[in-house]
Length: 96
Image 1 (tube, rainbow, N blue to C red):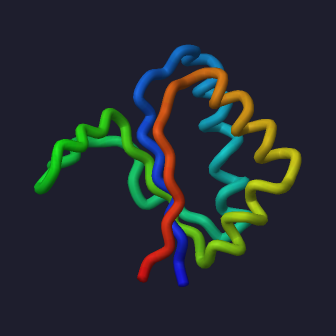
Image 2: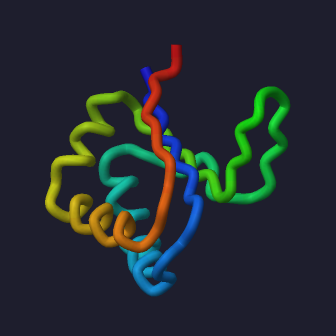
């Protein structure tokens, strides 16, 4: 069952770190079977009051692949760099 990682980048505090993150994250996500489903762009909210700034959604084949991605040192480094370079809201969900 696919798992979806959703993050809304609310503010980029260090554009150089964000560029570094973007350069490193794609091959890592792909290595664990993930693919970017959404990277920013206009979003039309059809219900509720959620107002995304720059939403990013990554699909993984399963929650297990997502958990494996969080383990390797390379992804920890990428995540650490970007978390210090932006403010965001995150969630991980499985499709029912």
